[in-house]
Amino acid sequence: MQRTLIIFKPDCVQRRLVGSILQRFEAKGLRLVALKLIKVDRALGEKHYAEHKGKPFFEGLISFITASPVVVGVLEGNEAIAVVRTMLGATNGAAAAPGTIRGDYSISKQNNLVHGSDSPESAEREIALWFNPAELADYTIEGESWVSAGS
Image (cartoon, rainbow, N blue to C red):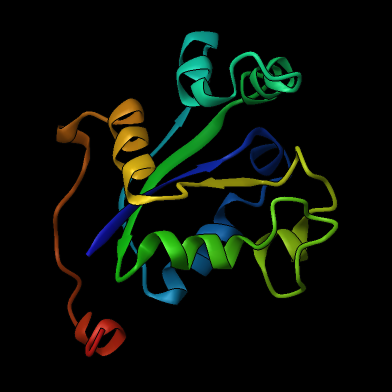
């Protein structure tokens, strides 16, 4: 099983799409491991987007992620990182395929609703940044083998 961080960004929270989008991840067969609503401060935003520091769009990223509360979570499942990234679609919502989350709900590159980790290394770093180990729940779902057996 693989874990990935997801952030329902300020635009997602403000548009009240968190539940609809979370339901899509759960319907796919991903298990929710952690979830919380928080107001991101500048320091956390800068840590999360550290690889973009010094780039022209960095300040815009920080302003955006700190503008309103976000819902941050951890999803777990077979190939969770690739599954979430595929479900999200292209970064630019205007170019994202219909049927993807961004293709269905976004027409912006910045306001693209949800962040998902892009690699196992990023997922590990990001999960540790946003959650302490005690906040991650290990449990089984009855009948889960009907969703992910043979993976």
